[in-house]
Every structure is written in C-alpha cells, then in structure tokens.
Length: 190
Image (cartoon, rainbow, N blue to C red):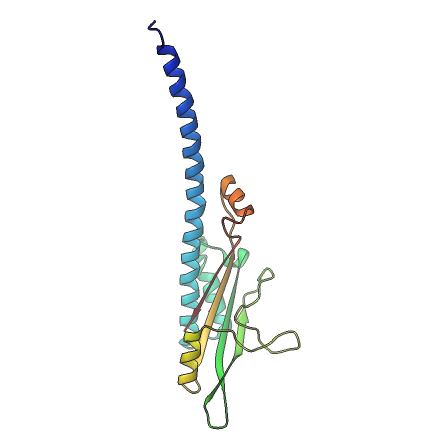
C-alpha cells in the first residue's frame, strides 16, 4: 500500500457526497422555479384568450367556462382552474357626460366569475354595485386612454388566479419562506 493513498480516496468520497447533495438541492429548486414560471405563462395565455373571446362577442359566463375548460382540456391539465383557480371576466366602459365625452370614470358593466374562487375577488372591480362593492374599475393608463378616445367603447378584462403548490420538499420550503409564490395572477385587456 502506498503511503497517503488511502487518505486521498476518503477525501474524494467526502467531496463527492457534499457535491452530490448540493447538486440535488439545486436540481429540486430548478424544478419548482421552472414550474412556477411555466404556470405563469399558461395563466398569461389563458387570460389573453378569455379577453379575446369576450371582445369577439362570447358572453361573459361562456368565456369563463371556456377559460376553465382550456386549463384542463381532455383531462390533460396544465393548471386545473376548476380545482385550484379562479377566473373573473369583466366588461368595462367609460361614463360619458351629456355631450358624449368620457368623464374619466370607468365602470364595470358586467362580470362573470367561475364557481370556485377560493376567496379571490376581482382586482379590477366588482359588479353589481352595492354598499360593499364599488363598480368603478381600476384599470391601467393605456386602457383608460383607449376608453377615453373612443366613445361607447367596451374593454373586456380577464383575470386568472391560481393557487400554486410546489412538487418538491425544497419547493415547499421556498414557498413557506415567500421565495416562491403561493398564488399566481394574470390579467389581460381587449
């Protein structure tokens, strides 16, 4: 036996064990972060699809149904919005004065929501108006510009909420420490 050879092989085993542990942790983190990014993109596509459908004349309840069904077509679920999500489709217009000009007040004129919203409410506004609900819409400046320049125009918003749950224990740890989101959200206007 060559002096010192045994000690070097033991050191290599320790280094390998440490390296493999770090590599496994890194890989598990990549899995859950990648899923969160992918799910965000799917939500963005679903919200755009919903607003597009509503702007082309599909009723608000039928738009909600289409978005929920498209999240899990034929049982092949990217996101199952019927179980872990919420869809809110709203129609928004600008209140006009006697001269037919926009008064810079934007209201929700119709809204449909999926059955299970898990405590989520629209961030755009609610409909119908009540003492606890203001039908005035909160919309981005670009949408306000469109509504204020075209009298009688209606803009449709689709909001999609999804309760994200990681698949690995490391993802659960990251989720509990607010590194990964617990809820994903997307909104689109057409």
